[in-house]
Amino acid sequence: MILVDDYRKYLNPQTLTDIQGLQFKARLIVEGFVSGLHRSPFQGFSVEFAEHREYVPGDDLRYVDWKVFGRTDRHYLKRFEEETNFGCQIILDTSESMDYQSHMAAVNKLDYARYLAAALSYLIVQQQDAVGLATFDTEVRDFLRPSSQPSHLDFLLQTMENAKAQGETAVGPILHHLAERIRKRGVVLILSDLFDDPATLAAGLRHFHHRRHDVCVLQIIDPAEQDFPFDDPTLFQGLEAEAELMSEPRLLKQAYCREFSDFLRHVRSTCRDLNMDYELVRTDQPLDQALSRFLSGRALRCR
Image (cartoon, rainbow, N blue to C red):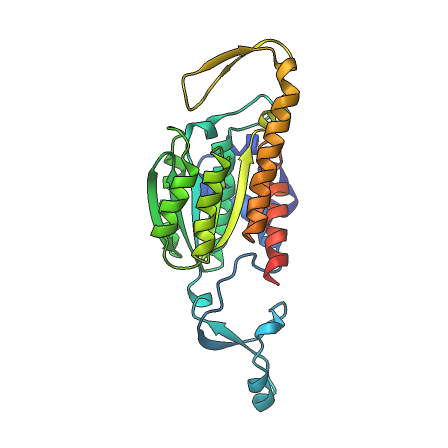
């Protein structure tokens, strides 16, 4: 039997690589950390009234029907049609740049994103809501519409686990395509390094905003991509192209870090301007810390 306090060791990405089955990994992550949250960080949209349900401690008082309280002296909450049919579409970048792993990280970006996506999928189905999946590189490779069935979760996690890092990145155009394809309003969760032209990326995100989705962006990067910890002459090889470049890193570091910081700042400001949740996640970061920051921010926003 595994005690709750012992789950922390399973939140290490390196330990998770030794455990067979993405669903079991997701369950360990969720039961060891996420299930301790008092409120769900995911909620549907209040669009059309559907029914009442009895108030339970922790519910949002904004939805109490005070007219019913006046007649019955009991607290009931209004439920809305979209709340009873909540759906989340996870969009997972499987382009070749997601295969990058430096010596500073336990796993590559795709595996780290998979762990986060699997844990969140498990959490959503546990709260009896629906989750779907889209994987992409230059085109959409898999597209599973949201469902809350346990058998669907098995298929979704298997699809996620089988996804291979391949092809170049086309984040902006893919987001345009998926914004047209995902017609029902819900939560859209994007896990990607977002390595695309900033203007093209912003246009794709804006399309989801226009469709009135609740968008969460988790930008997954390797620590070496941000810190550029190279000193000796190094041969750099592009993951999404065959180009190679022999360079002296010490001469490039200042300019590179400035450009990369500007890129991250542009992505963050774009999400803020579009009222989207944004979280920068480094693959040297323990999974519980990444989940804590993201889910705590969601829970605060949902109050």
